[in-house]
Image 1: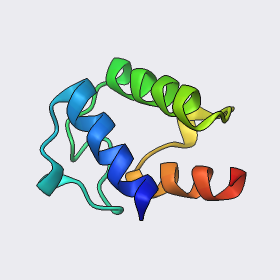
Image 2 (image 1 turned 135 degrees about the horizontal axis):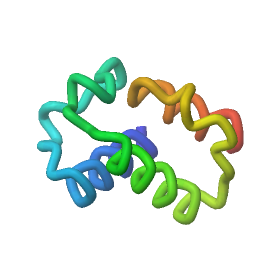
Image 3 (image 1 turned 120 degrees about the vertical axis):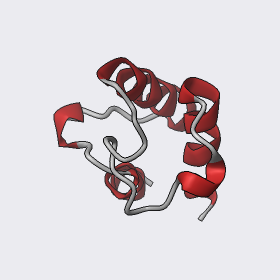
Image 4 (image 1 turned 90 degrees about the vertical axis):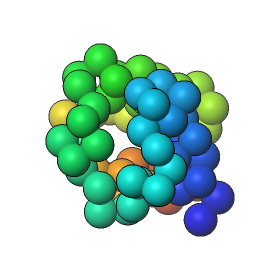
Length: 73
């Protein structure tokens, strides 16, 4: 669950999304993230976790990000 908490923090830092609005099922649209927010979030995650997200168009929810992190861990 540590990855989830860090993703929540990054979403708040990048796009001002309140922590209480974020769930693993939350979609990009539900959180009102635009393409620039998503790109910035993915770049931050790549830098922080040392991974490469090759197909960022497949990222539609917080759960998608968590699955990517779990696959690379």
